[in-house]
Image 1 (cartoon, one colour):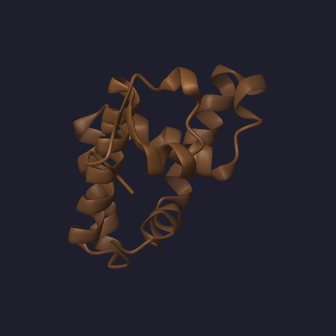
Image 2 (cartoon, rainbow, N blue to C red; image 1 turned 90 degrees about the vertical axis):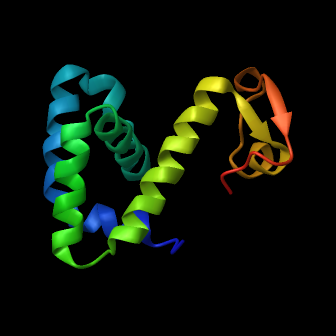
Length: 117
């Protein structure tokens, strides 16, 4: 997968991300004001994955922009879903633990085969 997919998506979804930022700042400005652009984008993607209608709208918007192919978008969403799954089951490869700086308390088991990187 092209590593630029998240950057391209941030560009395409800039207006939606600004609306999302305003929304979360209304909820808790203290917590969310410290979020980096990458962390806010991840939170946005996680929230989109919780709502299939929103996911379809985001996918349609991205595909219509012609800046990202449907295949690249689907790969990015698949990796995002796999990452969320790994967070929930707390199963990480040793490489991911090292590269993603996973905290010890966020690890219940390790693997050499079930990886996202």
